[in-house]
Length: 415
Image (tube, rainbow, N blue to C red; front, side):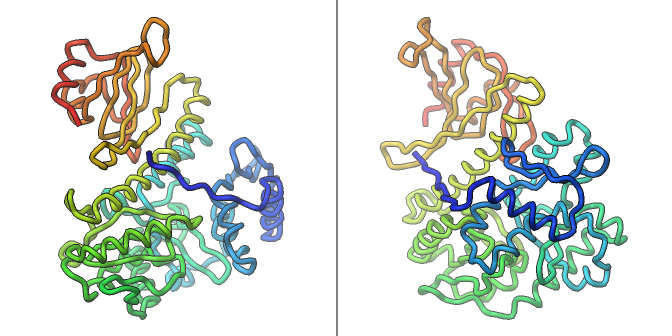
C-alpha cells in the first residue's frame, strides 16, 4: 500500500501560534487575533470588520525546516491574507515585480472549499477571496504574485480592480519578469538528466517558460517533474536510465516540506506541457506511476479533511470515502474505494470500486463484496453516481445497484 510521509516539527502548536501572532503585530496588525487550534489557524479580525484566516498546517513544518535566517520570509510569504489589506504597493512597483506562481489545480479547488467552510454558501464572498488563475493542463494552474525583498503577496481580484489591471495582460508581464530572472542554463547533474539551477521558490513556475527547456540535449521530447517549488528535473522520454534517475531524485525531493507535484509532464510542440507516463512495461513506469499516485493521494487526503469539516458544519451525514492503494500480484499498483449499501458517500475516482453489502452480523467476514472498474461502474450506474465538481473529482453516490447489475459489473470489469 502507498505510504505517506510525515514531517516531524520541533515547535509546538502554541509556540508557533504565538510566534505568528507576534510577527503579525510587528507588521502593524491591530485587529484582534484569536488562535483556533481545532482548525489549525489564526483568526484575524472580528465581526466589526474584515476577517482574515491564517492557516498554520503547512507553515509550521516549513518554519521548522527553514534555516533560522530564512524563517521570517516563510511567515511573510504565508501571511498574504493579512498583507492584502496593505494598499502601499504602487502599480509601477507591481509591474516591475509581478511574477507567476504555479500550483496544482487541486490546491485551488481545496481553497474554494475552505472558503466555503469559513464564509458559508455566499458565492460572491467566496469569489472575492479566490485567486484569479489560468489553467495549464489537467494538473497545473498558475496565479499571480508580486515579490518584495521581505514578502511575497498573491494578487487577488480586489488588487487587479484597484490597479485597473487585466489578469491576462498582467500574467504576460509576469512571465516576462520571470524570464529576466532566468539567465542560467539548466545543469546536467547526470548524463542526459538536467536540474534547474535557481532554487528560489520559482523553479516550478519556470515550466511557464518552455523556451528554457527546448534546447536541452535529451533523447526525444523533454519530460519534466517539479517535485518542489525549488527544483525541476528534466530528461528525455526515450532515455530509460534518465527517467529512472529522475524518478529516484523526485522521490527524495518529496521528503522536503514544500512538496509540489510528482506528476511527469511532456513538452509538446515546444509550447505546452501534458501529463505523461511511459507505457506499461517500461523500466521507469512503476516508479513514475507511484509518484503520480502519491500526489493524487495527497490531494484527496487534503480534500477529505476539508469536505468532512464542511459537511459536519452543514449537518450532513455523508461519508467522504478514502482512496486506498494496493499492489497486485503482478507488481502493478492500483487504487480502490468502497461503496457500501445503505450509506450516502463521496467517492474518489479510483481504478476499482468495491461494492459492499454488510451481512447480518454486520462484520467484515459476513459482508458480500463485488468489485469492478470505475469505468464500468460509471457506464452501468450513471444515475447513481454524480460528480461534485471538485479537483480531484469525487462522485456522490446514493442507493445501491441491483444484484443483476453487481454480477454483470463484476464479470465485465475485472482488473
